[in-house]
Image (cartoon, rainbow over all chains, first blue to last red; front, side):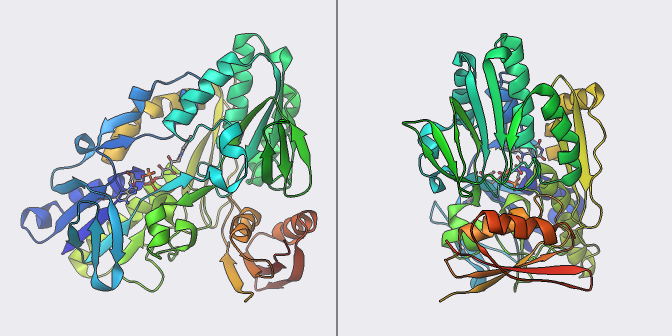
Length: 377
Length: 76
Ligand SMILES: Cc1cc2nc3c(=O)[nH]c(=O)nc-3n(C[C@H](O)[C@H](O)[C@H](O)COP(=O)(O)OP(=O)(O)OC[C@H]3O[C@@H](n4cnc5c(N)ncnc54)[C@H](O)[C@@H]3O)c2cc1C
């Protein structure tokens, strides 16, 4: 049995390690071959970008050699997939090789799509890439005062990022001693300041208390960089001195161009995680079309459920459990405090008031992540 | 030709049915219809409120066995 995992990010790595442990006997006996193809020899801890943008982490803390995170028994190649031939159970790669599979898992993640809003790429800061986060840090350090507008596209990965970066910028300007010269102005696409109702209920009075202004039902339409104006689809406009965006995302280009899913989102069954109409093709992490958070924890819990199911299909010929929609997100709340939201398809989250203990746990998790990717946590 | 698309946002607390609709509507054509399935009763209020502000059109909103079916037409 050949199991092929595409993508060496959070989801792909946790799944590969999970399967390597569950199927170690079968792999040693040559009955199972477990292969991972990725676009990079580095594993990238993306949540660290938020901290990089405000000078609290360094780029070298965000990378590890991918090979160092993988269990023995996993065959790993840096060779991005360029073609999917699902009817032939085969993919083709950049190096012109073909890989056959019995089970395929797509875990290629998502990418920011700044281009969809005219003027956004040229005029806004964004921290969704290393380059963007470093540029944003420079702008935050050089900023001398004025209105900082936060604008949000959908869908985006890490649903807590809009609130978190706003609280973190508030702290950043306070430490720089220029908070009295800065007006933070937060915009959000729907009728409250966060998609989770309970999070919005908690964050709104926090914003009020910190003097952070907000405007809801604000979906970006275009940026007029010359006059420093951001316009919304709903007909509003706001002037800015510094524009910070959480851009809309798409799945990977190859996923879209190869017809696996519109905008690069692979349509899957929400419980079994198999691609619609295919029993041996699965997707996990950001690249699915599931209506749940595009977050590392989602990729993690999906990988665990799928790992259990693929292993049991090898061992007993059938899956054993469904993915229940579980997501767990930390929420940095500024002033060295944080809280978290935990929910699944049936149970909404009920975040508690932020505490210092949860913030320090998140800071520790930023280092412990590497154990989590190995599947030890 | 105008199409009808189903957005199954049942069990979506985050990003939630309205965000799912906003995301999908962007890549549709003017005249396309989008039927959102939501298990959150808030959607019956949230979605029409945004649809009006954003200049789209409500086609239908009904509840069936605890699931709201809200259909919206993209107008611009
Ligand atoms: C600023 C920021 C803050 C975040 N904060 C949090 C947080 O606090 N908590 C949280 O849970 N999540 C957070 N996230 C989200 C989290 O990082 C992602 O949701 C997670 O990485 C998704 O995992 P994935 O496996 O789907 O994709 P990724 O981790 O992005 O991995 C995708 C992999 O696919 C590979 N790949 C791409 N194309 C190909 C190809 N053609 N062939 C082969 N391989 C390919 C890439 O090289 C990569 O290895 C944050 C993200 C950002 C950017």
